[in-house]
Amino acid sequence: MAVGRNDPCPCGSGKKYKKCCLKKDAAERARSLPPAVEAPESGDDATAERPAQPPATSPKLDDVEEFLKGPKDADRDPFWEEFEGAGYEGQIQLFLGKVGDEDCMADGGAFEMLTLIHDEAMERKDWTRLAVLTQALRESLPDVYEADAPRYLHRMIAAALAAGDLDAVRTWARELGEKAGKDVDAVYNAIHLLAYHGHLDILLELMRRAWPEVQEAPGLVSWAVPEFAGVLRLYEVFDYLEHAASPDPGDPELLRRLEFDEDFDPSGLAPALEALSGRSARALALDHFKVVQRRRDDGEPGWELTRAGSERLNYLCNQFVAYLRQRGVPYTRAELGANELHSYVPRRLAGELRPRESLLESMMRREERRPRPRQPLRLPENVLCPDRETFDRFLTDLLHFMGPQFHQAAAAMEAVPSWLRFLEERGLLDSVLRERTLAEMKGLSASLADICEKQSGDPLLGPALRDWA
Image (cartoon, rainbow, N blue to C red; front, side, top):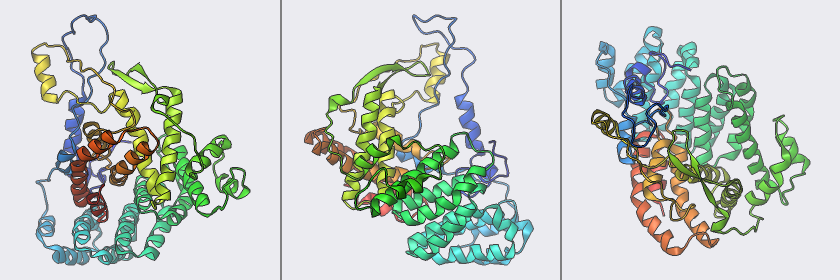
């Protein structure tokens, strides 16, 4: 769906689109346009249709903080100039003074004001103030509150989590589930927040309430409803494993939990339970993860796991979830990290995470009529072991400004030391490469911690990343 100039920016900043990412998006679209004419490369058929050029290189983590910031809008009315120049307490008083003024609060005004207050409140650990201000808006202008209710509720869930008030977390989560059809993205943000912090019982309450709303939500892409069903199904399995003395794929209680999804195929339930419960002892070796060459859609060469290798990677990641759970990591956080590692391995093989030509380099090359350089794609030393350079790009993709996924990035980064140990214990990685990888990744964790502390809205992410390895 297209984003209007006055719509809330999809990056989650709380600002209007025209005041945040509009200029950046326009520049991004301009960069992605293919050149009108390009000199043929040596040995190529000059009349052959060329694939569109890939976009310019994504920034690395050190650049993400600037990348996530929106441009400042020069056209501000006097009230906004006063509001932005006021201190924290001054902004709160200005907000309360205008809370009944619909002209000021409508069209995203309330949300933008509360965004600025929210950021400072989270830094000050003034958790309860956010709920008080949001409640004041709700009582004064219920229609204005309802326009952005899912995003307010996501923020209040985050603040209540930081304050350790699980009763409030549950209350807001229930309400968010009932409003899920209004903003599925806000619901997913809350799901990832709760998953990272391991609150499975609250997650299930939220998602069970949200399920009928998501099914009826307008404008969703075709895969959105099946994806939501898959996540809810997985969390039902996790909750079953937490309470079942002897997990059984034929258990009527488990099947009852999963019957909400009419398209569910139970044939894969037995091996999934076996791996996720930690009862599987299937041994794997590196040569079980064979790769073959492939040609990407953009014409560049790449590699991919064989079908059997992909199935084994899925099984291995489920085993890893059980491995983390046995060491005290909640199922939901373990799955969040394992899922990203499961995505990283094939993306690196396919060449999606290697360096790309910058916009300036591309323009200069076309002007000089030089062929596009071909960078050979080398197989990694170990297909399962991450390397610093490509994992940096992978995390940066997760933090893309249009929808930064801070909790997935943090869970993936936090999982790396355990993943390397897990691989070593199973004979899939030697100790020398494990220690070298840990040393190389150390700085990456610190960079991600800086970003999460400043941008994520979750004050608990940064300290966990600083305790990395």
